[in-house]
Amino acid sequence: MHSRGQEHLKVLLRSSVVQKRVREMGQQISKDFKGQRVHLIGVLKGAAIFLSDLIRQIRVEVSLDFMAVSSYGDGSQTSGQVRLVKDLDTSIEGLNVIVVEDILDTGLTLGYLLRVLQQRKPKSLRIAALLDKPERRIKDVKADYVGFQIPNEFVVGYGLDYAERYRNLKDVCVLSLPPS
Ligand code: IMP
Ligand code: MG
Image 1 (cartoon, protein in one colour):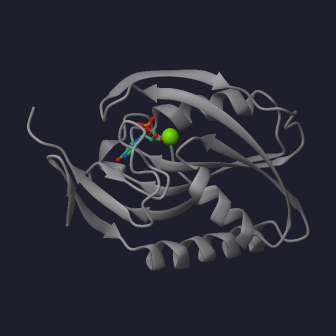
Image 2 (cartoon, protein in one colour):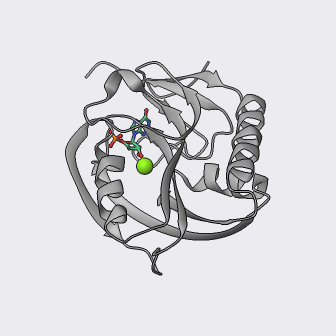
């Protein structure tokens, strides 16, 4: 248990456990798309760390693009609104697209992104999410590749932030905030 001010961090998923699972996810994707090419779309910024590990575990031809959306404010409460902040650089028409996201929570972000991307006629469209909090789902979205299902707690580390902090932690940790 570390702490910063009144915030407490408790390790939920050790770095070694995360690395092993990411390797398996990469192997699964490589198997599913054997002989084909995949186009990864990283959802900034949270997925950046996961994506950088995942892409190196993929053994088929792969290309990369990024999107950014804003759904949360600076804190840990969802606003329920999703806005496209950065669009793709290139067309995805005819490509095997895998959207790479840090966490599937309410499903509002990915629900929105899938709708936008589907209109652009990819050959296939899948989701890879490192974490999944099924208890929190509002919109019915399912990821094709899930690293870990986790309980309904706020987590940080391995790319995930709280007000832009903690993305650099190697482990995924539960963050407890002081009562406000
Ligand atoms: P959704 O739209 O509710 O599914 O939320 C997805 C986005 O909310 C993720 O990409 C994260 O940026 C953020 N988010 C949801 N849960 C957490 C969490 O436990 N820690 C950090 N960010 C989270
Ligand atoms: Mg995010």
